Image (cartoon, rainbow, N blue to C red):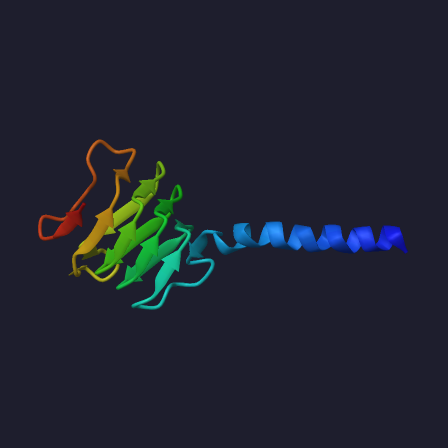
Length: 128
């Protein structure tokens, strides 16, 4: 009886300790679904395909994986954007439809393996 009680208590402690890590898990786009306009993502975002963010706020930064593609329109990133080699970031222009989009705000550093990020001349990007 004593040993089964010990396992129950240890299991309960494991659930409490493990809960915060799950709450801070990074979201993924598009594999985890494309965030709806006006939504807020907490814990960061990993781009693992072609992801279009429109009016979305991301807290915790964004990582664009190799060979993947992030398009931002009227969105905010708190924590910076890390573009891995082969990844692509478009701010202020959507090449899928050939249109200029709303300005986005990035509160943090944009890390891009290219010398200079490609920004369309008509784009307005607020980097703070």
